[in-house]
Image (tube, rainbow, N blue to C red; front, side):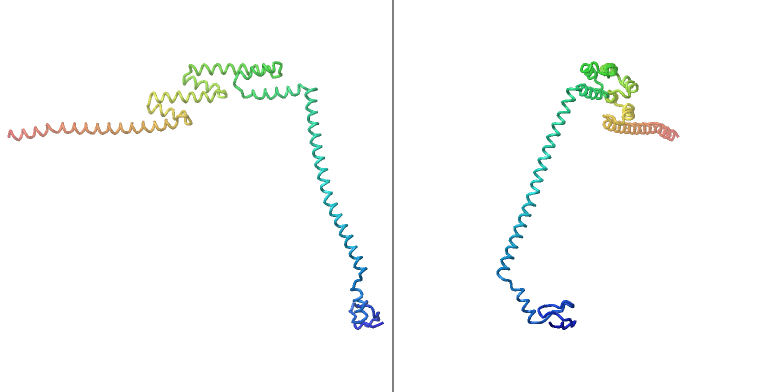
Length: 271
C-alpha cells in the first residue's frame, strides 16, 4: 500500500491513478502494469481481428439489405401503379359499355342538347332544317321550327333588299332590325352606297355628309382627303374671283377719270 501524494489516501501500489482524487501515481508497479496492459498478446490480436472481421461482415450485410429493400419497394410500387391503371381503364370501359347498352338515350340526349345550343345564334335556315331532319321528335322541335320560320323570313327580306334596295331602304332596315344577323352587312352596304354618291357628286356638301354619317366608315380616309382638296379648290376660286373684281374695279376707275381730264384741257385751249 502507498499513500497518494496529493490527498494522502492509502491506495494499492498497482494502480496508476488515485481513486479518490484522480492523481496519476508515479510508481514502477503502475508503469509495469501499464506496459502489460498496453502490450497485446498474439491471442488477443487474433481475437480482435476476428471481432473486427465479424463486425465488418455484419455491417456489409446490413448495407446490402438496406440497398436491396428500396429496390424491392420500388418494384412493388411500380407493379401496384400499373395494376391500378389497368383496373381503372377496365372500370371506365365497363361503365361506358353499361351506359351504351342500358341507357342509349342518355348519349343521344347529350348530342341533341349540344346541337340545339349551337342554333341559338344561328341565322342560316338550312341549319334549323338539318336539326329537325336529325331529331324530328326532339323536345325542342316546335321551338326550332319557329326559329327556322323567322330565319327564313329574315333571309328572304335581306335578299330582296340587296337586289333592289336603295340607301334609304337600308337605313330603314337598320332602324327596324338592330339585332339582325345581317346588320353588319347592311351597314357596310349603306357605307358603300353613300360613298358612291360622293364620287358621283364630288361636292363639299355630299362629302361632309358622308363624314358625319360614317365617322368609322370604310372610306373615311378617302373622304377626308377629298374634303381637303375641295376646300383648297374653293379657297383658290375665291381668291381668283376677288382678284378679278379688283381688276374690274380698277379698270372702271381709270375709264371714268379719262373724260374729265380731256374736258379741262379743251377749256384752257378755248380761252
